[in-house]
Image (cartoon, rainbow, N blue to C red; front, side, top):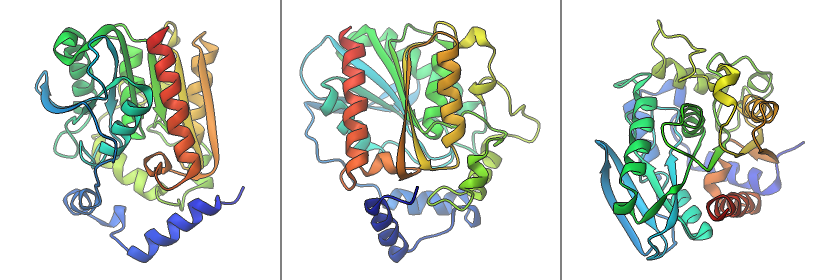
Length: 302
């Protein structure tokens, strides 16, 4: 299917603005460019607070003053190399406002300065801290979910398998689940748009040391034994048609279902990688936020 007209228009606008090519840049160069594009979301919160989640920088979003809310622990995308609290402020505000529940955005350590498994370790550490300090966050420790996009979806899947604390839901937005890049969508969408095969190789090359096992459960949750899938929390897996990560995300969703986990897999046709962050510009992205927030709220209120 061709790109959705709204997606094509966004890509034309991005091309006109220009910018560095990911795989031709240093991490420092592309971080500076990526961070310069960060714009806060418009949603007004009851509270936004920066804090330390067990030594990991994080930002809490509370849409109301309720003290029994659910909590989505969110891991930002950016290939384990770029991104942070500011780049994903819009996503976190939106999910908090639409669901009526709190969001804790986690600023895990990034590669290449801190290669695998540093990001996974921080994801697990911050989740444990959130559970143990739920009262400080104004949330119910029995209502905790994890989520993330792209590299953050990878980390959310990893912690949902490890389950250091009880979880009620996992929101996986075009998650990277296979570091070997073995699925056909890496070839079908090798030229992107937005995320290319070369860019993904650049990200993985910075994140994964040469000696690391790319099929390690903390890196490629798709290759984890069935025992780590059984009993995992219910999931929503969102993918985009024009995305190298499409097939591995959907394969992960199917493996959850095969192991008895209630999971919904939604592919957005005509969309590209990172479309979820453009919910103020594209109807399908806005719908994806509505669906995600509704399923989060349902899981928290079950």
